[in-house]
Length: 440
Ligand SMILES: Nc1nc2c(ncn2[C@@H]2O[C@H](COP(=O)(O)OP(=O)(O)OP(=O)(O)O)[C@@H](O)[C@H]2O)c(=O)[nH]1
Ligand SMILES: [Mg+2]
Image (cartoon, rainbow, N blue to C red):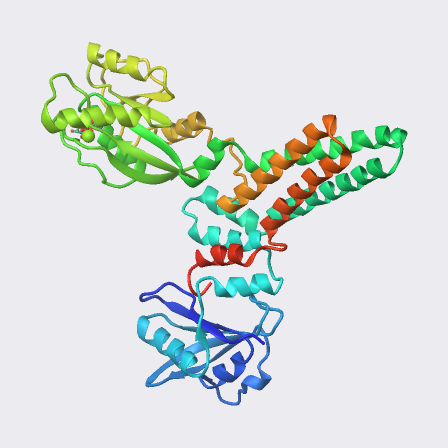
């Protein structure tokens, strides 16, 4: 018997629709005292059907939809009722309060999904995919999360686990049978361990890919004063973020904005324009600009095409030349002066901004990236541990006895299965679901 939990599953605040969700044994009894419809009895409710009726919650009434999902064919695997109400704090909270007064208890963060996991509706890594999808703030992150949610990660782990089990069987043969059998079995064990090693390495991906996925790519705009850096920042963001004036030395501090290019998160920084003889705040701004360039994945070097190339510009370029960068000739809408550049744009008219975006994608390798589906640190640790064990096993194949290798392989298996939640410790499960929002 599981008690009934209840929560508001949609975001707070006024909205067109809000959902209150209940799950557990006895949801129908509670719901039947909140939702009313002529000729309708909850006992006879059809599953998965949308009923239009009236909810009554103390003094509050609303016309609302109600859906009943019969166990085990529901998100949690239990009996579930959902009320689709008109959004807004009062109605939504009144319905929740009434459900609580009728014997439901407030759901803990992630408790619906936790029940889904406990009832075998999804694995731990799929549950983590749900949480990561909700938390995602770029398309690439969402895509990786969906691969976990959809069971792609699980499938890979199970297939890899199966190979390890086969390797263990091979090792048992080597233990139990005479020399000649060992020579026959050894290559197939090594082959399986190599295959596992490759799969796990690919799952982990490179450090760079993972950083791109979670933190995004840092791109810094630099150049001499008045080159149009802040204008370029605004054009790339599609919003008036940075102050633009015709006076040199407008931007004093580093200004950051997050945007997406080809679905990948990019942190774009506008910096103070560089010039000789700057003092005070401007001088500090220039120092910060130089620091920002050093910490960035890519620099956008902006040149003012309406002015002739200066010694100062060449000098600044020398500092950037050896770092990943794109040379941009700005103010292309004016008949100005030629420059050696990767692209000519106009921040004012938006000319060639799509070319610039494509160049950013190309230079940072965004295009070629298919994100590894490990969406949480816990998963990364588990796979890294398994990979370490497999590497040790391969090394031990050369020097150690089969039972020694077997122990390495078993350790790898344990690490892998912890990922999908087989025999997961209570504390691990608690930790995972505590990150969810209430109502999921
Ligand atoms: N015609 C034209 N003018 C531009 C273009 N981009 C910027 N400007 C003008 O150039 C001047 C300086 O632009 P900003 O974007 O403030 O330049 P900045 O590099 O950020 O300047 P500082 O912050 O002072 O270093 C402004 O008057 C802009 O309107 C462009 O593509 N075409
Ligand atoms: Mg500026």
